[in-house]
Each structure stands twice: as structure tokens, then as C-alpha cells.
Image (tube, rainbow, N blue to C red; front, side):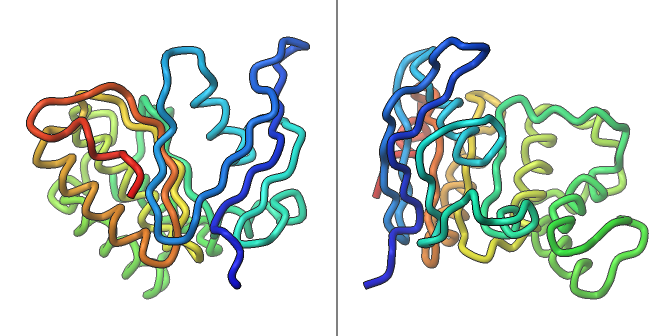
Length: 214
């Protein structure tokens, strides 16, 4: 029997001696979308950041049956993508170059020197997110919604080995129709892997239920 896509056991996180998470355990089966739901300060973001390896933690995190602590950063980046809320970019890069950052785990060091494989992955990710039209515009010049789609394209450009995406969605950045298309992409991603996300409130027009588990 194949192991779960993600298994977290007794996760514990502290910040400067202050306990933020204690004894958190969860399992994400293959092909599932799982939402972390709760009020502010309940540890949703911290849980995802710990799973992504962005904050020190204790406990065991297994990805596709492999202990996360035994993986190199590059191996982990090929298996897992993390999209935080806020979509902050600190350099005046072109939108296409931001998407190209998703190819870094596959060896791309310079967006100006793309191989055919990297170019194909970037073009496919931008086509799926509807961002081709502003690929040559500086990311700082884009609207909040456009920037959100570029950051999603960066995640898709990774072409994850296992399809696990840790994603935080900031309510209001994507319109209802856009949110439904994004959910459709998640459903396609979950065929071979799983999706873990933080749910932030409810939207109108069917947008509020798009991160429930299936």
C-alpha cells in the first residue's frame, strides 16, 4: 500500500521560546485537497510554513513516505511548492522572470538563458494562469490580482514531482471566475498528489467553498 502524500506527526513550533504549535498531526492522502480552517492566531500559517521547512520545528514530517529532514533543499523544492499570502516581490523583475524562478529547483540559474525544457514549462504555466499578456511587464506595475496569478504561475512552473502545493490565498485578490479556474487547476494537480491550503473566510458567488476537502 502506498504511503500518504503527506504525514505530519506531533509537530511543535516555538518562536523565541514562545510555543506557537503543539502536538499537531495530520495526514493528506493522495489526490485530496485539504483545508486548514480556523480563526486568527490558531497556527494555520505556522503549520504550513513548518511543513514547507521555512521555520524550525520538532516532530516528523513525511512526504511521499520520505522523512522531510532527510531531503536536500533542491529535492524538497521539486516535490513541494509554497505560495504565501501577500505575493511580495522585492526586485523589479519582469513577470516572466518571476515565473522562471519556479525552475530554480531544476537547475535554472539565469532566466535569460533558458533551455527548451525550461521555456516550455514557463510558457505552459503562464498559459494556464492567463499571464502571457503581461509577461514582459515589471511585476511591480501589475495589479494585485495580476500579481497573484504570476505567483501562481511560478508555483506551476516547478512541475512538482509529487504535486503537493501549500498555498495561502488572500481573499479579494482573485475574482470569483478566476478563483473557480484556480480551483480547477488544483483539482488537476491533485490527481497524482495532494493540496494543502489555508482557508480565509467566505466569498460570494460560490467562492467561499473552494478549499474544502474532497
